[in-house]
Image (cartoon, rainbow, N blue to C red; front, side):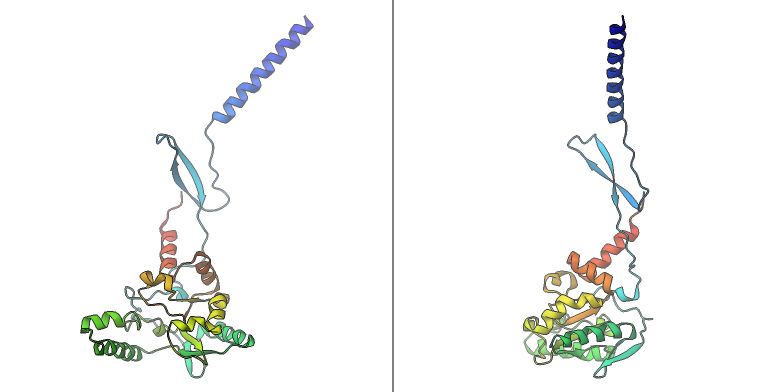
Length: 260
């Protein structure tokens, strides 16, 4: 009798464990959204009727498209009419927005400590100066046989349209090798540019018009034009290999993505 009771107990125990196991692995799973802001995305398996909700992280970004150092100007985005910046001399009478003077000076100083000779050849420009430079470039193309319209289009790839130049913001500088002050593709082969392209993000700058992003920026490759965006933004952009236009678009998507 005792053996039968033990046998029945064992059988009941095994059945109980089996039922518990079945219930545990067949009940709906809860999705935790406690630790960080997240949103729900839907991924379907091969069976389209089997929809599985999956929680994914929404990156936490401190930067906003309204930040002063992320203002975007290009052929599609003109400088706001009420835009103002406080200018300050960096060196050799070159002026930039006062807020980027220190990181710019530090970048130049550290480059010189490496035995390099960086030289600022262009910094802040007034609108009238930009108009003059643009018209000069247009005339150069007209002398080459281009029509007025064609010359204006070609010129815009080399000198940005007045009112859309980052130089008018005071946030960009053109830096060249002092012993090679020619704005052409060979500038990228100088030791100055090699160092700047690698280290500029440490000071909050980016190479604004890389050759791989010409279709997006609509500006020809300029291995001398550096734009201040802030250290964290610069590092993030280099890591993801994106230009400013793409970064702004990314931030816009984050700001408009609803949380669930």
